[in-house]
Each structure stands twice: as C-alpha cells, then as structure tokens.
Length: 488
Image (tube, rainbow, N blue to C red; front, side, top):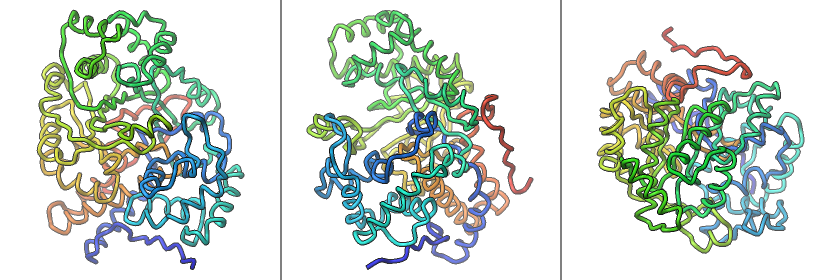
C-alpha cells in the first residue's frame, strides 16, 4: 500500500508548543541562507565535466556507505547493490539494486539517512509517496528522467542548492586538474580543495607505496630524505592553496602528536622507508607529522582539521574483496589531552594557527575537548561527525560542549559527505537542531531572543566561513553578499 510522503515543516523542533514556536522563528531566519560546505568528499570531476549523473542507483545508492552498510548488516550483498569491488562494478541491473533499497527502506526508520533521503526525494525530485517495493519503479523512473535533464546536471544543482562554497578533498599525489578546469570554465561556482596527506604519511596504509611514488613525481622533490620529504609537502600545499584550499585534513587512527628532533625524525623516516614498519613506528611517524603539518600551517595559513578515532576497514574479508570505504569503519576510544600535548606545548598559544578537532568518541566532549578548546587559542571544535551526524548526535554535542567551550569555540556545521544530493538535507537538519537547542535556551531564559537570533546566523553561516578562512573569494568565483544578523 502506498502512503503519501509527508515531510512536516516542524520536523526536529521541540514537542512543547511554546518552545517549538521559538525554534520555528529562529529557523525561519536561516532556512534560506547560502550553504557553506567547507569540508567534504564530493568528486570535483562532477563540476569540471558537468556530465549528467547516470541513474538513481549510481548516484544515490552505490556510493553511499550509510545506505549499503545498513543493508549489508541485514544480509544484502554489496554486489547486489551494485557497489564497486576490487574486480570492478558488478554486472547488476541498477533497477533491481534500487528495488532492494526500496524493499528494505523500513530499515532506515529512526536514522539520519531516513531524513536525508526523504528530503532528497520530496524536495529535490518532487516525489509525493513513500519509497517502498510498490513504488520502486516509480522512484527509479522519476529520478532517472530528472537526471537526464540539464536542470539536474551537477552545476545546475550546485546553484539550485544555494551552495556558496564547496570543498572537496584530495591527496598530495593528485594533480588537481579538475579544479583547474572548474576555474577556467567561466561557471563561477566556488569549488575548492583540501589537503589530505594521509596516504603518504601512514606507512600502514596499503595505498602508501603507489601514492608515495606519485607524490615524488608531482612534487619534483627527493622525498626519500627527511628534508626533501617535508619540502615535497610544502610544494604540494602551495599547489593546493593555488587551487583554493584553505584547510588540510588528517584522518589518523589517534590524535597522537610528537616533537622529535630533526635527527630522530630522519632516523625514523629512513627506518620506515627501508620496510622496518611496526605499529609503534608508524604511529610515532604519524604523530610527528601532525606537528610538522602544524608548523607548515603557521607558514602558509592552512587550517588544520584532525579527524581521529576510526578503526578503518574493520571487516578484513570485505577489505580484501571490495577495498576501502565500504561501511566497515568503526569508532574507537580516543584520548586528546595527552595525545595533543607535544603539539600544543610547541604551538598551542599562537593564535595565528587554527586547528579544528573532531571526534567519534562522545565521552570526551565535556571531559577533554571542551576544556581544551575553551583554553588554547589554536583549538576549535568541529561538529558532530560521521556516526553522530544525526539529530541526537548534534544535540548531545551542543549540550556537552557549550557550557565549557561556548558557541564561538565551535565552527558551525560541515557535512563531510560524498553524497552530493544530501548536502542541503544535512545542512537543513543542522539548522533545525541548532534552532531547537537555542529555543530551549530562550524558553529557559538562559539567552534572550536577540542573542538567539544572532547565534543562529553565526552557527549557520558566519562561524564556518570564518573558521575556514573563506571570507576572500578568488576573481573567478561569483561574488556574494555578506550575511548580517537580524538585529542589523
């Protein structure tokens, strides 16, 4: 039986009528503000070529680990969902793969994916009935017909979504040709990159050998010496800055930092290059490189993002058959106070350095992260991330960090997604949750309505723009009008 797809205008607002009214008014001030998406993993080739997306499965299902990990947990094979393996894209009928999602859509009840997808279905594609086995073909055909039109090409959707800035993420070995094409196209969409050096820092990463060779090639440096290796990073960082980068990103297993002497670092580096890789040595090298990246940020101004605490590719057999990023990354306990001390002892009091900390371990919000960010000038707290990019996760973040770090030691929201069409949905959820949190503070007389009105604009727009140094736009990007507080 088909049911109407009813997406309430009051979703995620408080149940109490008075507080809900305050939240509704706050959300109304930011509902239509431009989207600042300063960190994510969309493909720059989409915007360089502006080619049409293939079909519903290729766009919405096969690349989205939030979706296929849930289906996999219920016994659905990745091949049946047309998810790429090491052997390539399986010869699966995309309509049948989509039917599997539709038939199992009830599995996503209560998850953020349910909110995101229903937002995409109703607001982007205009669908008016729930996704189910009965409506699977309707959905597949409606979405595919839309994707075949110019209005659903990547650049048109970027403009329709009111995206002011979108950052992708590339490695040091990437030549950034798609970003050059975007700049030269005359389109004007502000798509920039971010420097993610993990694959040439982590000697335990199976991609290291090939990435290291390409890193040497594109940097033009002798990266087999410690000084040459560091110079290679400096050269590539400058290339990324020329491509619009304002940030670097570091997805290490832990937040460990180190402060080795040059001789100690050289000896460690050479030992690892010789193949003498142990978990302890690899961890120490990653730790030293966070400190080296901070030193480079003081020179070139890139904002550092540290995303630790994920046990990558926990499912060993799935890694062997399908490779990385197949929904098997699991959060771990993560410690920050001692881990960051070497870096903070060296650079923590210099306000010209900016480091944004993320976590998958919510137990450290009030105990470690909020006190650290509430003291050190270099530190800001990134939003709820990955498994906690959810209404409850966002609310827990605000509840646990605000009383110690305040609002202005946080950086607003970033979506950190590969799923392009979910970007407006994710930002909408964040705006609604922040409106609900501030509405409760107003109702409890902890802030007044003028302060809340200023805060919701800052959390939505001003803080991410400031934190990621996006105030200056290059000549090839369309100009934007500054956003003011309602009181102004």
